[in-house]
Length: 423
Image 1 (tube, rainbow, N blue to C red):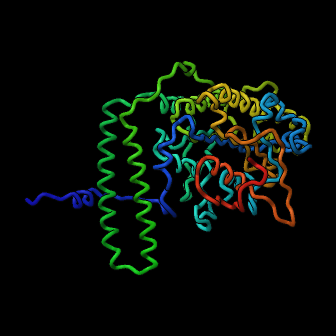
Image 2 (cartoon, rainbow, N blue to C red; image 1 turned 60 degrees about the vertical axis):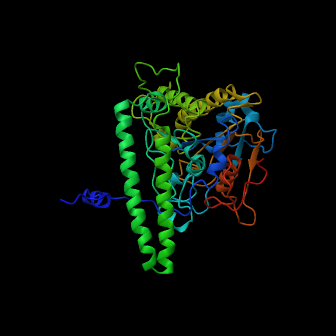
Image 3 (cartoon, rainbow, N blue to C red; image 1 turned 90 degrees about the vertical axis):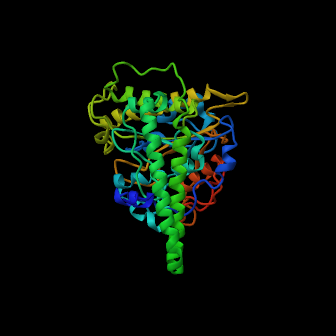
């Protein structure tokens, strides 16, 4: 009997490849970026609050450097020169309340993704593409009480890590030898599948018109992207994970507040060990105990306060908890040195905000946005009111972040340029 060749074997097993439709090769400067040391590389952390922040307690009344900290920012008093507050930024044309909060980091609804060259890719994932295989994980996504906030450029929501143990194991638990061998074998099969579909696509080139040729070039680009991901996974397969003295509690927390605090701890460890340089965390509500004294209602219910004072008081407790945890996280980064002249906070831009400007009225206007660290000149409240009927897109801030991160691009989402005055 004539032996089956590789192509026949793969087709006989029904191997199918579903590839993303991408505009261009990811991380065009990856070779240059790989030369940079972990000490000099930039990191990015994006924290999204599903239910926003009460505007009256978040936005300062004064602009510039000499502003008074409002209630929600008071826990960050000792870090005032390490962050900037932004007013009057949002995503043009975005409405829909909770249904549009997924636009927080992209400025583009998922059902509008095909109208934009890069789809509705979120700013963290655009940065992750640039990082490539320099770290074990291109990015890590965390979700508490719901989904995540990160989307790929082909319109796919990235599943979030929802369990503390899962994240700890990903960072520090070594993969058993038997599993590593199995993964190596799977990588080899996947490479063979890519070889076959690549050969078939190349054979079509002589039989198609110009329009289809363009589509085929995009297809080749997507194949190369899958190959890059395989190469990244293989490169880290046999490299030992970092060691840590940090231990999760034997009895994992049942309260929302304890869980949030521990996820922040793991995020800091992920950055300190250079396991990843891109992190996102989506914070929704809680399914069990909130862990906050005096809270008698659910987070979502309280966000629809209707200016009821009793609800606003409880909501203020929850939101101050979030800014307090942000402060604790920022202080931890500030106290961790990556070089003689730079702290981890100097090398990490931390964005906190929401896709909701006013949860009570389901408004997506005037988003609460705060950016810390990353080597920017901070210490101000910057306002960008509409001029001549034209508002400043929040994506201008994201474009500034990407450029500081090292991505060579002059656009992101709905941006009209970098954010004026941010240095």
